[in-house]
Amino acid sequence: MVTREPSSSLVLVLTTEADAILAEGLAKELLARRLVACVSMQQIHSHYFWQGKHESAQEVQLLIKTTQDRLDALHEAISDLHSYETPEWLHWSVSASDPYAAWAAAAVNTA
Image 1 (cartoon, helix red, strand yellow):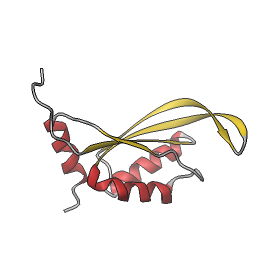
Image 2 (cartoon, rainbow, N blue to C red):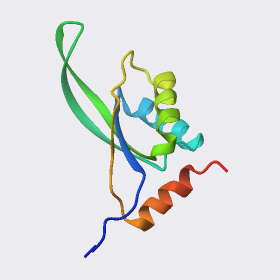
Image 3 (tube, rainbow, N blue to C red):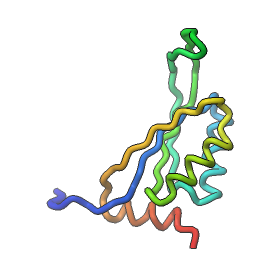
């Protein structure tokens, strides 16, 4: 049982890609740039409106773990690298255990 709120600057980012190959490529590039600590991926089926029409597509959802100080650079990289004209970009700060937050911070540390 955790009796105190862990300190964390951990951020989760959600985006989707058109297929597994594009998702893998994006994840590997973000990791290579040390912008993310981890990317989890899963196949999803999405329904949405695009250019006034109801669309439906198989996609890969990426749940990205990073730190607050890498968030702007991550957003820029996703904007540049993503295959979609308008990539999904959702992010929120989360609380994490101290060991996990420390691991994530070390994973994106570029020093």
